[in-house]
Length: 533
Image 1 (cartoon, helix red, strand yellow):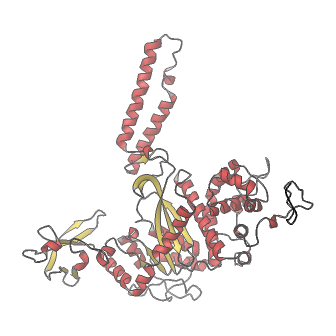
Image 2: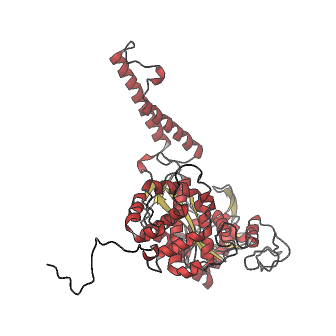
Image 3: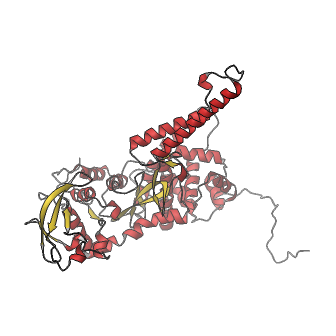
């Protein structure tokens, strides 16, 4: 007989005299309470408008499903079946769902239909982070990370492979018809009309391949993935796989993601400008410092930063080779340019003069300079050709200005933050939460899935730095619920006026902190020179 003296009573089959309160399911400072309070602050009217409440059975409350999905993403649980299991076993999920238990089909269907409203909800959560003082826009780091699509690499085909596949299927279809004719003959009772003689599955596959071939010709891409035609074959790790390029703009204060997007382009050259516009749109102000890796280094991006008065730190592709690395031959930075005489001076002290112009891949004219390398003592360290040739872009001065900024102590200190600011959220989502492959197909659904994971990251930042009391006591000019409208539309007007590159006159003291202006010499100056619309 088991001795039970000296122990607290333990009876699993006992019944409770009074029902438990949901408030007793989790501790007072639990993360589920914070996420629940944040969702209660959101404006979900667009989501409610999608429901028809006049006919049929009553649906689950969308706010409850949003809380469950957000908490599951925050915990790194993505499977709808796994979420359904948690709704039966985890007290935090029971608290959020008020002990309601939607099936995995309901959860999956709601999540797919929920993607359309995620962009607006993401903007509201960014505003909440600003109100909680978790983002200050002092330094915003941009970065891109590639993630594998929900598609097999074997389904990525070139035009030649598609042609061969179509020929093989056509040959198979013809052989099938010939075998049937030889076996049954024309007068066979098994004969069918001509339009039904072909195998439906084969004909549908051929039509799909022809459509993919036409799409590949129109897009100009090298390969197309038959499983997910929006996915692009790109380098992910050490392999070339179908995937998407996820862009993120991260604030340095608490690593809040203030802007996010998805693109099918393998490189990041064209992502800086749209991401900057999204940062301004989501936050209502301009970041003071912008940093990015050399993947964003283009003359157009440098020109954009200079024209709009942004303090950018984006090294070019050869910056670290020139400053830190070792090269077999003298790099271009060792050659000094004289703008008055339009000539270069090589490390040996010889003059390199202009010889001709040529077009680059973008159609811009490059100026070529060539020197007299005969009997030069540094020839073997300079080039293996007979003469050293240097090209100069019309906007080469932008690189010189950027390198001078990166060489200052302030520039070095600020750019050193980039790797810890921009890379940390991707490490959290991919490594800690095990999000290494997409679950949805198509650019639209993939963007929704990525926004859901970005929101999960931002919720984790809020749970780490803010208490439940601070979240509940949020006060804003927007009222109880956060809507897409900003607390100060004037700030947004000022920030968006930068894209027009037009000088303004007048002054506005209310927007002075975020305004950008142009003086007569074209340099960005203090706030004078901007007027609110």
